[in-house]
Length: 121
Image (tube, rainbow, N blue to C red; front, side, top):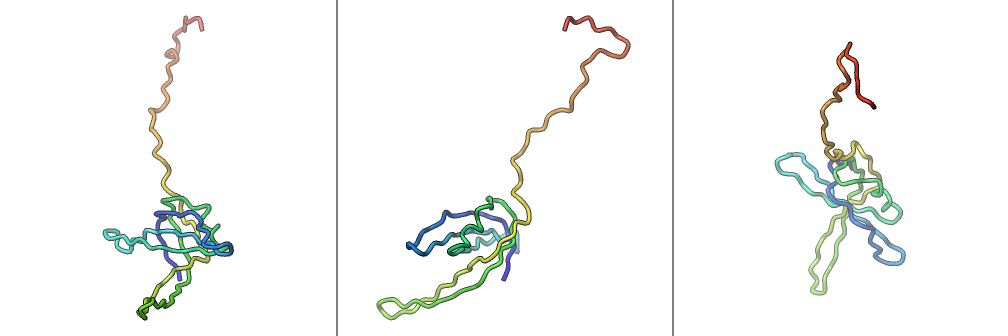
C-alpha cells in the first residue's frame, strides 16, 4: 500500500528491548484539505534509518504494510490493533525553505556618464 502526504512529526528511535527497536512517523494526509488526517506509521529494526533524511514539511510517498493483531486482557475481552509498517519512503519535495528577505536590486551609484569623479578614493 502507499500514501502521499506531508511529514508532520518524526519520533526518535525507541529501543523496546535489547533486540527490538522502532520509530514512529506522523504524516499529514489531506485527501480533503479542509479536514486533514494525521496518520501514524512505524518503522521496525533496520528500517528505522529510513526516517533519518526526512524533515518536517517534506512531501513524501510512504510504502507500507497493514498489520493487525488481537490482544486479550485478563477479563477475557479481546481488542484489535492495527499497525502501518513502513518498508520504503520517497521524498517528493523538500519543505518550503525559510523565507529569505528580499532586497532591492543593486543601483549604480557611480557618476553619470561624462562626469568626472573627484572623490579621493
